Image (cartoon, rainbow, N blue to C red; front, side, top):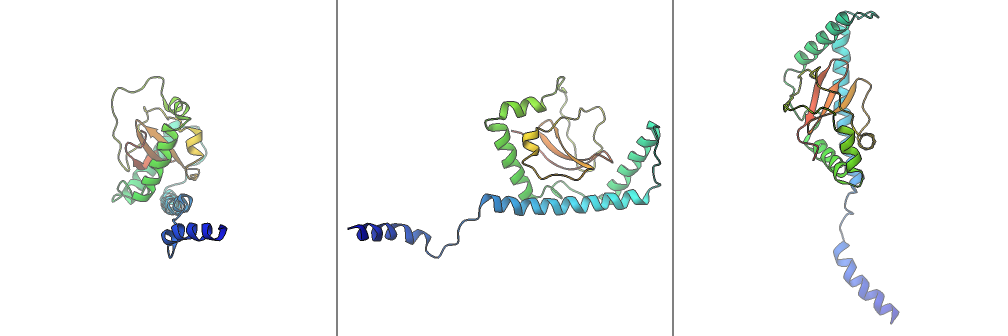
Length: 189
């Protein structure tokens, strides 16, 4: 009798799985997408370093005007070197899809209230700002903190890049040049 139960169980289970490869794990897909993202970020950082090396070196100074001029020169040169850059060059379709999934889980999950509180500004801007790739990050815009719980789920960035949330958009900001490197519009649900 026991053998008959095992045979019946095999008859129901085996046809659905015979000859089929196991479905890829979400973590395998995430690792693949994060690898693509890291490679594209690495290409940008190389470009940034090459462009910065072409500029006169900024000597240590407390002169805000000199520091600002160096930053503006770096931003102009990078934007010129990336004049054909478009949204999605770094946040590719696959990367965007995975980031949106992670962000959605963070902002709709059990810690959603804390995540929203982290990004809420005391004085939210009345105007909606639409940024584009190679735009300079507006100096009068507050630097919104990306929730630490979200940062722990996204790929770590090199020192001169940061994730910034502007309105509902997730941006990749070059902190050295002050440029928007790429963005995911309406990423925050």
